Amino acid sequence: MKLKYIVLILFFTSALCGCNKFLDIKPKGLILPEKVSDYEGLLNSRTLTQTFQVSLLHFTDDNLNSFDALNQSAVANAYYWRPIITINQKADPEVWGPLYNVIYSTNVIINDVMKATDGTMEKKEQVMGEALVIRANCYLDLLTVFAKAYNPVTAATDPGLPLVTSINVTDKAPMRSSVKATLDLMISDVLKAAASVPTSNLNRYRVTKYVAYGLLSRIYLYMADYVNAKKYAEMALVAPHSTLNYNSFASDMDFPDYELSPEVLWQRTSIDYSAPSSMLYSVDLKTYFNNDDIRYTFLTTTSNAGLGRGSLPGNYNFGISFPEMELTKAEVLARQGDFTNSMIIVNVLRKNRIKTGAYVDQTASTGEEALIKVLAERRRELAYSGLRWFDMKRLDQEGRMPVVNRLNLDTQAIDATLAPHSAQYTFEIPVRVQMFNPGMELNHK
Image (tube, rainbow, N blue to C red; front, side, top):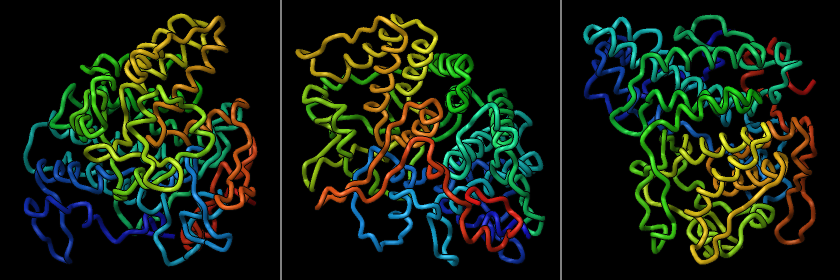
């Protein structure tokens, strides 16, 4: 089968929204970048900045919803962990389709920017590096959905992703690489990018060295390579930043926009502007907060049934934050037995999140006790940030995920269950992709 049936797009015209005025219309109706500024226009486009897929929120135990048992929408299928998310063979597959569209657009830059008619070698390599980081981030999200969690014993044989690097849609579609090969490509790409991208950029949507380090930290955390996860988290934390003290704000509306927040390392948004403000905190997630936690006060609303996620100024960030990097470092320290320094990091964050008069330091006397508290803090701080499914997958590998139930909001009956080590942690290759690629290895045989 042809590459177009993996990517499921015609061409990258949609990626050029907002930068068409810089580009010429070539024969056959294709919009082809020629100058370095044209490729930068792609980096600034909605396609390459609104990359987060909201289904990654619906999979998680943070989210509370209720669907009719007969509802076969992609959202309902994601929420109930049904093997196939998008059952309509004519529809663009949820998660898979949009992310491979992004990957195709990054490949346009990666393959062709060095042929740009102007610009220095340094600038071309920078633009290529930014595209490599965006592509790696997309592959990581896809991997958490359509492949088994990383297991060092089986990663070399577990099916990963089709690694699309070509922009010729008539090329033969690649088969699935292994999980290890997928991660190896991501790491190699981001390391290459880190050598060519700058330490600062035009805005937080654009990639810097610190963004590359942050993504490497996240990838290594998924692989349980804690030494490298900590190493790159610390490298990311060298970037100028500060932690917002929630005690200093009268309400969430006083917060700086995410694009300007000193806590944001890399801004990623979603085409679905209603997420996560329209979503509800699960019963389980609510148990992690008390009334002294300002996050619970500012970031939730009682305007609908149950407590839903509040809406903060600006476009919500699903990228990389400095608190994420701090918590990664704290987690690794706890796993290494350094519970004292692990708790110091957690308490610095909590002092900025808990009402001043109610704040009390958290303590731990063992690495395991510290780890439990770090993971709980990670659950609170990163709720609806797009990382919970990532965490659920990796924590399930070490037996730290309990049974997750989907409850009927009216009857409280259990509508669906995600058991530890369940095959439901891995969704099936979309039916539309299967239809055009009958030889592709499936997850559920």
